[in-house]
Length: 261
Image 1 (cartoon, helix red, strand yellow):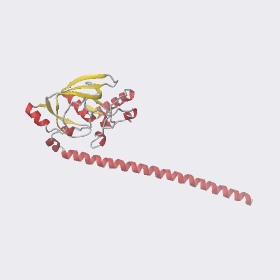
Image 2 (tube, helix red, strand yellow):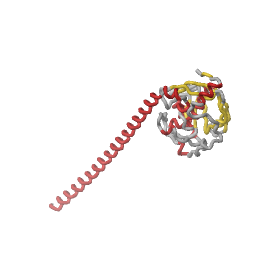
Image 3 (cartoon, helix red, strand yellow):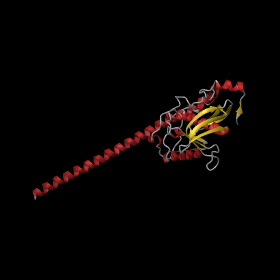
Image 4 (cartoon, helix red, strand yellow):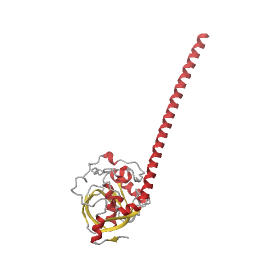
């Protein structure tokens, strides 16, 4: 449920937001390096990156190549989004640091409208703000209130590179802003008031601890696989050397036996 705020309340809550909203069309900090073909490479199936993976805070490059690979990436992102019951997903959330997002407010494949936005830029936020409970696929099981502008006006490109200008409102505006934040390296708790962040503090700690342990387990698994691979290689080398030694011994014995005869 969306709760509209009065003017005084809006100003008070704006002052508490960790990251202020600003129109970033001419902001030099917003402009990122252009991507290369390698930046768009991915291996399906994609997986959602979970907090606190540093890829969620990394700089995301602008896309300047609009080809089948980009369209395939967008299709794969939709597939992951639907399978995880999401309504929006950004490229960094699947480990690809480029300016790309997909969303469908209906959240069901075959229903609603699938939207692909490339290199989006916000040039107008509404002054009216609303509070709404948000979740995030990179923060499984965590839901909390986030204050955002009701409407946004944006410039972007579609998957073919065509330029588009659109005004988004209601749920579409909120989903866009959530995913747009991801493209800026901003996470949804950065937009929460301090008391709301405090209310999910323990959940964030649990998720962070889980991910640290998970990464440690993956590193151990990689080490074990490398060790097993190296051990197997050594055994094979020793086996080959043993065969060569046995062959040489057999040759020597055969020669000696021939001389003796």
